[in-house]
Length: 278
Ligand code: KIV
Image (tube, rainbow, N blue to C red; front, side):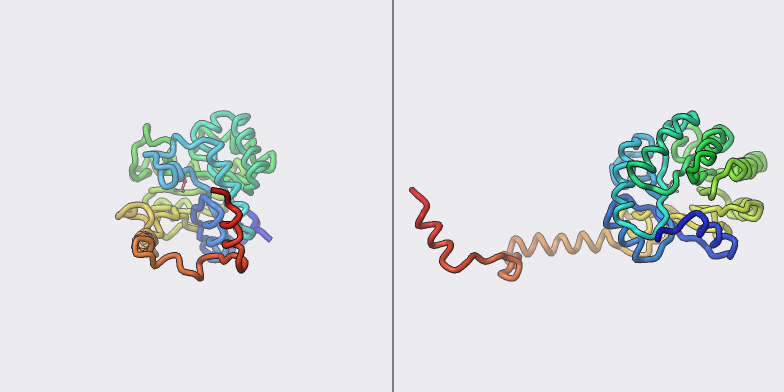
């Protein structure tokens, strides 16, 4: 049975911190499930870590639908949340169309939208229609051309706006809200004021849960990870070492061995060669 938003709400009420991680494919989703992580985000961070773009902006709804469908096929337990890509929810109607594709074609259980006041009508419409919505405030990567890549809410005015936006998302029916690159004291204050869980990334330990990008935690995306991430493994260098060993074994004919190869039926090759004309 998959985790539901009710289970997430219960974890919040019981003060059990909620871990969440991104995944973009079938195999990773299987690993997340085996690790017992209750929520997967099919994030538009795939634009950078999977597709090699410099931002999330080029990611399309087709991209997210395809990756999300693979993640759904790879998991049986985690609640799958998928990002609505840049400019696919400018109106409530557009948001409904995008969510319909993600829920019907990919099979996700919830969608995530970035922003505050301007997207409240879309959030309200989606939740009225039975679509679980996760909000996303603070640094919102789809707006990076407007706000820059920096911590949000350091000044009183910005902080007040963030608190109001978080409350508005909750009132519009969101079941959770991501707080990205928000000062820890502000994130804790927002968490205290909300009934729904805050899921932090670069927002301190006072959030109800934490979300991280797969590649940042596992040492798969360059030498440096963002300050808010901890590298729990060095999978990139482990893969590199394994591939070098593989290439060396091919060069020295140490791979494949007889154990890696199939055998013909007795005399079949001699017979086939005899039958070949010329
Ligand atoms: O796309 C993503 O991975 C995200 C997280 C950084 C929260 O939105």
